[in-house]
Length: 535
Image 1 (cartoon, rainbow, N blue to C red):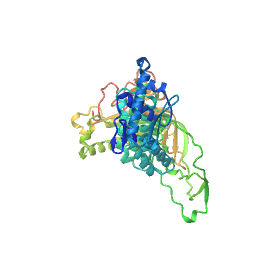
Image 2: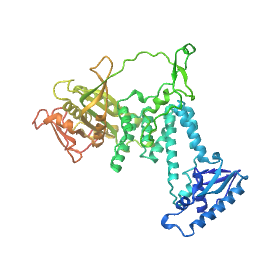
Image 3: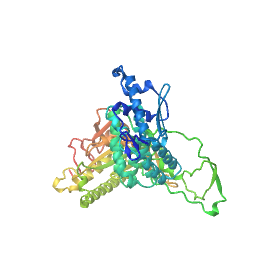
Image 4: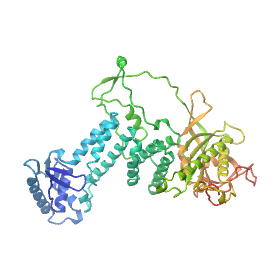
């Protein structure tokens, strides 16, 4: 006799499903199976079958009748002793082989899959976790849930499935199956949009598929939902992943497989700790493992439970990059495809996509030219988002913040020349909008070894602020933080971006302090209506 709980409640004897009777009888069996081989007090059964203010005076008698009916069903459905419902003070106990309950089989296979994942065998973990998830036929005890049953134990089972689904995604990512898992991840995030771990996994999969801009869109959408609905910022791990994507962090790539030890290397051995050493337990609901999981799974030794030795191959000496925390200004420029510009059912029309790609490339080239013209350095390009770094020590003729703002205005006026007629715009130009943000503060700058004057990337909370301001920028707008406004001086005029004195929309960039005329080649009038490229 088998009990199937991962879906509508079913009892199967041989190849036949056994009738289970009415709702109270089914609910009694379902709750006892959730606590299989454990005594459930009568008082607890009464409280899960009825609400306290709706419990009839005959509730205990109804429960006894349900137990009596279930005993008859179990006795008829299988050989004696296969499954028994016994009275055991202070309540009842259903006694059966744990492997006859699909929930227990699910838990066992999940344990095997997680052990394989922790042991650096992601392909095996994919098979085990996939087999565990395949046991589900719908929500746990779906027929009871439809009647309004809400049990904490049932909610825990449902949440456990989501945790396992994220473990399955993690195993697929560690196995290099980011293309194969992308559709499943998108469906999971659509169904559970507030789960940060699966959102981070989707961002990582998109990044590895060459869709960096879409990965950042996932982050921005989740952050907007958290802030607007709950007043919360994304967790530390998700923010770190977003900054790593912006900086093209090499650690986001697949970890190389462990090399097999050659026979000649067996003499050089290093002891490895046993598998049963304690490890730190993390909260799955808040902590994302999308960034660090591939490193752990790619390098963890296959422990057997006892100390052993592995060969340590000789490695070339690699000079580490130089990291410095510096005061600087960062310009973020983004070209966005207008909503509906390229519908999914038009994706197969390659000419449309090619035109957009070529236009985005021209925008990227124009951005790089203007950033370098004003003494900045392009340190990252994530799809249609370009990052320009400006330091006070790099160039004379204005501080870093002022040069970043002038570069932003120059980029916009280069790709959206004022007065250009719509008839001279290509369809791709009409389908793109330009947005820019400038932030000033301290950030962690990475320099190549041996070349401390050439920054390679920038990271830190300053980039997170830049992303938030970029989301505030309407088409054709430049938004600056308060620190950038103060550092730029009177050569730029602003108006509040969000009704406060923290974020500012640029109105004009003047040639000199107090001048009423905008600077040539980088005027940025705020008064004109938002427009797309070419307006």
